[in-house]
Image 1 (cartoon, one colour):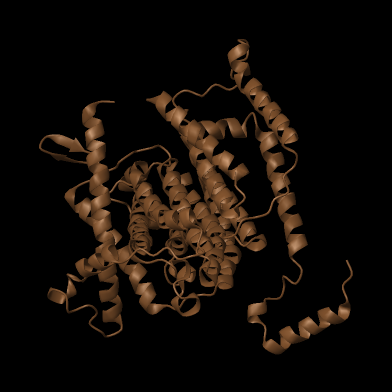
Image 2: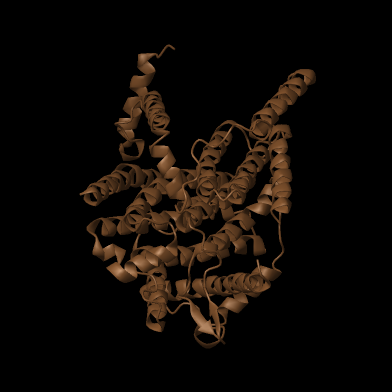
Length: 330
Length: 191
């Protein structure tokens, strides 16, 4: 391992961490603005022009708030739970190619931290661990709302994970590789996965629905449904610990948007500047869609989510896999 | 580099699982077990078995998640559990025997030289493909039998848990639920 490689990797890790922590902050601003416009309000307006400095104000508030660990909680687990959510979200980013490779000052940069040959499985596995954050936080909080939230987290996990896995099988079978770079190359040559094959389109929709459960966004925002269980697992948290949950959630939204854009919508295509811009646009669309659904749809009940995942989406996904197999055989 | 990683993860794994066994706090035990399971995957990655490493992570996050759910049902996870510890001498003897057995099994390929891999890694094939080739040729029958076993377990689980599965409490009216409760009370279930 040469020094240049180590330095390059370290720089990439720092850049990804900084960019996406900042984006998580901006994500909250976008969310408030988008929700406000959809409800004919203005959203944050007072801090800075168009309320842009609201992010800084929120950041200062979160960082300087007193860090309260209530009596009766299981201390170490309570403290480590937010870290799990945030850390796993960023760990998953290691196998995502954020941009096509480019040359700067005569040095070719690959904007992917580790091109492991099992990329997509790694991303899903690590993102799945991220659900331990709400679960452990809820169980350690010694609060009944938090405990209900943790139970719901476990229920969501066992429901959506099956759909995610099965819906991903179809593009995996078509491309024949687990690396996101191979997905991109295949689609650059054969057209976007979601539109080149009908089975690809079905699995795209299934994965998209499961992504809402994976990131815990409305309509599957059951772990922290304000009007039923206060803030769920976050009820007992304050200050930066609560902020870490937040950063993890928003970083996860960005990363899952990248994954969807790369697997199903062609990624960065041929690797030109237009392709890179296209990837960012697709990610922006997916992120906007997360906010859009939050403004437009109510939350479902936990049993409705399980009904949807096990009785509708999973059979669909299985049939989809079988049809893909038959088509590929003949 | 590899040696450092190996000893680090070996140490961490042993610490985690020791904690799982020793702790009498359900939440600590479960969390340290989850951490231990994830750390085991590091050994797969060090052996270049990327696929198995990730499968280890995915399978055990789900499996331990189910254990958490049990923990939630049976204990107040924020309190300590009172355990009935068996005599220490028995525990010590058994764990020593188990350790010796594991060492003997694992060190066998080192001692006996005529043991070779029956299915050496095919050249020029990426890791998931290699696993697939072995799984669907040599180990096809065990693979299918395992699948049938899982199916049997699943059906048994459905049969055991699936009383009244055709009814959904959330979709029933209050009077219907009251009537159902009354019928159940009248039936006088004897087990």
